[in-house]
Image 1 (cartoon, rainbow, N blue to C red):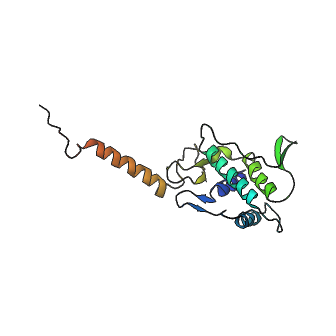
Image 2: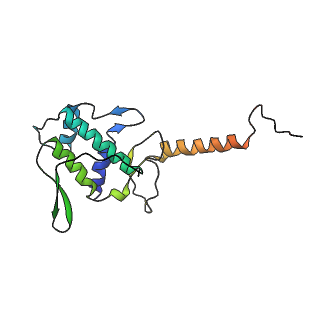
Image 3: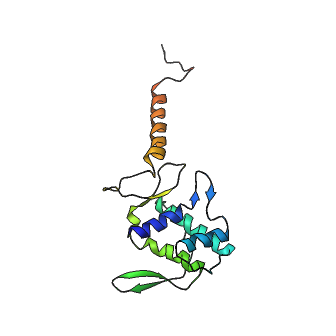
Length: 171
C-alpha cells in the first residue's frame, strides 16, 4: 500500500519546484528513471513524446495532490480495468507509456489519502503523511514549516507596530 504512495511521491518529486531542477530533463533520463524502478525493460527507450507525457502526468498528479479545484486532465495511458478481488487498474503493453501507466495505476494502489504536497508555497514537494491523524502540512518541519511559521510571526510583529512615518497621534 505505502509502496504505491512512495512511487507516486518519488515521481512527483522528480521536479524540484524550489530549485527549478528536473530529473527528467531528457528522454534518456526518463528511460533511466523508469528502468531503475523496474517499470520498464532494459531495452526500452523514451522519445520526446514520452517525455511530454511523463511531465503532463507528473504535473497533473501534483495538482491533484494539492487538491486544486480544477486539476488538469491527466494524459491517456494504456490501462485496463480488471475485476478480481475488486477493480484494479492494470497497465497494458510494454515500453515507456506502460511504465508511466504503472505510476498512474499506483494512484489506485492505496495510500493516496496519505499523499500530500508541501503547504510551503515555494516548495511543492510531495510527501507521505504518516501522522496518526493525517494533519502534517510540510515536507519538512525544520525547513518548510519553519519558513512558514517565521513568515507568519514576522507578519504579526509588523502588524502590531506602527509603520515609520505613520501618524499615530491624532487629535
